[in-house]
Amino acid sequence: MTIEIANKLFDGINKTSLLLLKSDLINYAVEYSKIRVDWYLAGEVEKDQMEDLRRAKHNAFIDSCNILSREMIKKGEDASWRKVLGNDRITIGDFACFLSLIIALKAR
Image: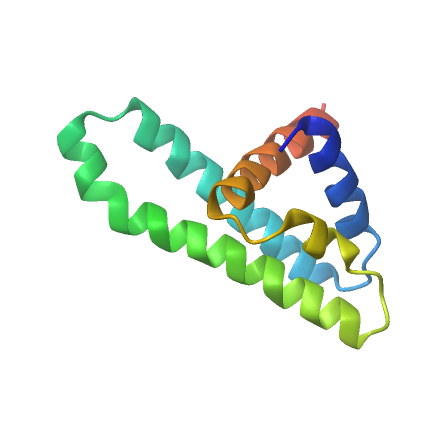
């Protein structure tokens, strides 16, 4: 995953009319990226203690990607971003972190 690819995927997501589902996806991305940073900064004991929560946040983000793309397809919208994203958990997690970065930069 590169920032360029993440930007293209985000552009595809931004084309949806499903604003609540898009907002959910963004919120889950930010939550996951936050816990990923916390996990990085934690000691070994703390990492073990937060592993279940980190995995749950990751799964919630993946689910939100799947839900948004499925609903976009039902509405006749282009959800090709989801196919490009793929199913690799690491890549999807990286995408969540890129979304957090992209949104933070756009908010300046």
